[in-house]
Amino acid sequence: MNARIVSLHCALAAFALALLQCQSPPAESQPVALSAEQTGPAYLGIIYVSNRGTAGVRVVDVLPASPAERAGILKGDTIVYANGQFIGGGYLLRAIIDALRPGQTIDLALRRLNGHETRVTAELDPIPPGDPWMRQRPQ
Image (spheres, rainbow, N blue to C red):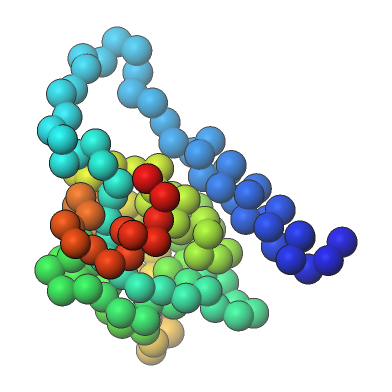
């Protein structure tokens, strides 16, 4: 198989695994009314690239006043785990974030530029109006 097809198969498998990790609330729990802004896509507020040859994704920018900035994510950090899932590339991180809603949290294991590892939790926001990245993502 050519490398592109293998890469696509890996991305689809990672997406499927991320969806399987999403848990529904127990049947006996009371329904929660969500506001309009909580039903839209979740927003972490980072720009990242996949690391070639190493695990995780590297944060190239942290957007101001974003959940990522509030959680203490820094430019240059490498996200290695998200909600307990090993991050092999950007597709899986995107799938995990897309499976969440504003107001939910994401737990991240980071490797700093100095090699130290840390964990942070970010409460996700709704995507800000006029966000240029939203135009590139299907609804």
